[in-house]
Each structure stands twice: as C-alpha cells, then as structure tokens.
View 1 (cartoon, rainbow, N blue to C red):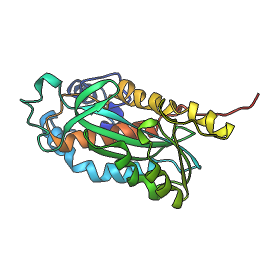
View 2: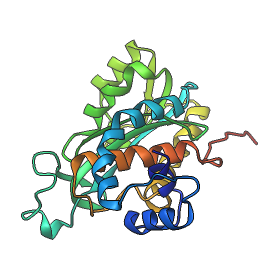
View 3: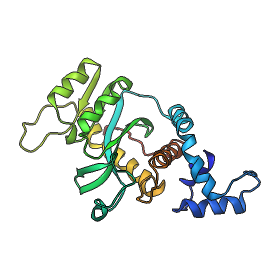
Length: 240
C-alpha cells in the first residue's frame, strides 16, 4: 500500500519504472520485495484495506461543500470497438469537452479542499443521479455547476438539511441569492482545480490499465496521496 501511494507523489508516470527504482534504491525500507510481475498480481488484494484507510483520511463536512464530476478515460475514442478490459463496466459519456469512453469520478470537497466523499460510475450516468449517494454524508450548503439543476432534487435535498446551490441557464429567470452564497458559487472552480491535481500531479487518469481491480486500486491510492498532500486548494471568502 505504501509503494502504491508513494508512486502517485513521485515524478514517475510508469509504475514499472517506479517499482524498479524502489527495488534498486529503497531496498532497506522494503527488504522483501517480490518481482514486478508478482507485485502486479498482488495489487488487487489491497483494494479493501485501501478503501478503509481512505475513509479514515477523508475530511469532515463543514457546512460548505462543492460537488463536481470528472471523466476517467480508459481508451482513446478510436479504440472503443476493440477495447475489452473494461467491457461491461465502462460506457460512453459526454462532458463539455466532448465524448469519452470510461468512467465518471463524482466527488465532494469542503472549503478546506479536503475530500468528503466520492463515487465511481460509468460514463453515461447523470451527475444528478450520482448526487443522491452523498446525501447522508452532507449538511449545509452544497455548491455545484448547472449540471445539477433540478427542482425536484433541490426539494429532496432540502428536506434532508442540504441546500443545493447552482447557477441558472440563460433561458431561465434569475433568482435572488444571498451575497455570501453568490461569492461561494463563484469559487466553485476550486474543485475543478483539485481534479486537475488528481490527474496531472497524482496521475490517477491514464489508459494503460489491464485489470479492473488494479484500476480501482490505482484510483484509491491516488486519492489517499491527495489526502496526505499538505497544501490543498482552499476557499476563503472576505468582504471588502
């Protein structure tokens, strides 16, 4: 688990090269390392322990939360017909950047940049449908983009003590919003910044997976690495 987590904080993009580095220069810390092929076969065994550890690393809801989803591609669009590793799991989905084949990672953070909850779905799942998974873990104000617009969903969450706040589309009438809520809504992009850190710095998104179980473990290890990150993007509201 330590090796898998530390890989995401290293500068290596290829785990095989990173594992060779560990065997060569960190033999004292890991004196009983197995071969790379054997290690890859053992990775799936740490899925449950990693999930439990990640639960311990997650932050606490502060009443100010941000929600969004990000796509995780498993192959290039031109190779969808030939792809077999995630057959029956991954699906076609669409974001503002276009179509993709893979999964959606739905996540919620607080204004300290701490991960509160997450969910992994196929790429064709609507963001509003995935939101219902988090309703028992949140309270207070929840800020999302226009993809979460739904009067029915807003009313349902309101009954559970969650105030869902989103922008409105151009063809909708504007509604009055408290200044503090409007300022927090403008800061919603912080979760997109965090998603970019997950993908660019912690390497949770690539198309070289050859096992569903190892894909999930790779994702969990990356999220744990983020939870250990000392400097996280935060949101601070100040009034002039």
